[in-house]
Length: 499
Ligand code: AHR
Image 1 (cartoon, helix red, strand yellow):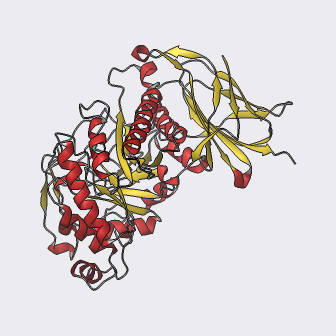
Image 2 (cartoon, rainbow, N blue to C red):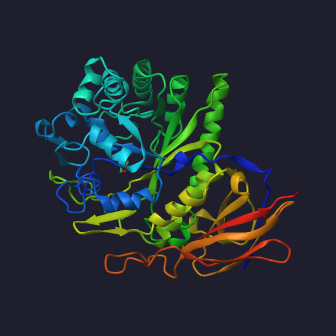
Image 3 (cartoon, helix red, strand yellow):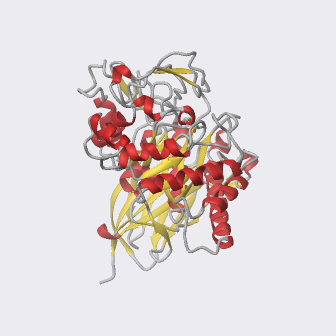
């Protein structure tokens, strides 16, 4: 099979915001405890931070980390997690039926972020706590000193403010599973009040309002409309969440998941334009896609009232990694509205990294994130793709290739991200550049395999891992490449700019 991609530097979508390569960690299962924080482990440093996990995450270069939940946050009192560790209360966590010792809280999280060179993105509880509690957390974190909560922070060992500039107003408040779940009108009032108090303490912060949990919800978009119409002037982003699942075990269908992700984002393009129009506003609100991943195999959500139970320890395979790559392609194609996105989550719980006491396993979904984080920068371009299609079950006819591209002026290079969804057919690809010549292929890298279910395992950890791809510049200064079935290929190409 053959395909071509045409790129034109004048056809661009918008600047890629690095914050789309952020992560999310929740007090859930072994994400915090035994994941990033394990004081008893010989693999941890003096702060109890797992050094091997830190090193693997550092390679992903995540700019922000969302914390502490997730469903957990909606019945969490941040005050339980500050002060002397041995005086902190042990609590029963409503969301995951687990025991929360509170030995890791906001100060430990910020310390971990600083060690990782990551910015914290903090969620507040708008389920069972209120606006004042949220504003007091902003005071605790960001106020320099001389007030009750800022002085408490200083006494707790952080003389300098934490300077947290990105805040989420609750989590998935349209979900019946959420502590303090409510109607859109009620949530909008809560979010507006909390947002005003929080910005009252620190006017420099940015706020993310909860959008609807997903397209499968009855509340989809209508919830978001109500929230945006109420809070348009008070917030900066609306959240979107999506967990993709191959629940029917239909790989051809599942591998067309990018179609659905694009649809969700174009729904938000329409909604944001509508509310902006109704408001006659010059302000623009963007999407914070602050939970995304594949998740359907491990549905264990009941911790049986134990500490750090094994929950949601999903094993990821090749097709899951290719779906994750499609999330990232879609975020790039919508670079004009998606400014933040968080891989949910980062370790042990639906995560690219699994730990055991003496080691760590890198899962397949680590690699699309790594390759995009390393190569997607500059202006997102609109690729024109001419290639075959296939029947993706109930999704109908879908292009075999899923593509995004970007141009980086500093290095005069373009980068193309190509997913071949076919289960069996390789593609001979040609990439041409309108009015420009390719000078050299700087990078050709990707991952592939014959079996969509192939996965890394403790005893065989490198089944899915990046390998060199085949690409060259031809005599007409176009790039040619062979894109294998079931693959992600990343091509970085140096351009010959007109003199
Ligand atoms: O990431 C796991 C859970 O998924 C989060 O706690 C919640 O926000 C979502 O439903």
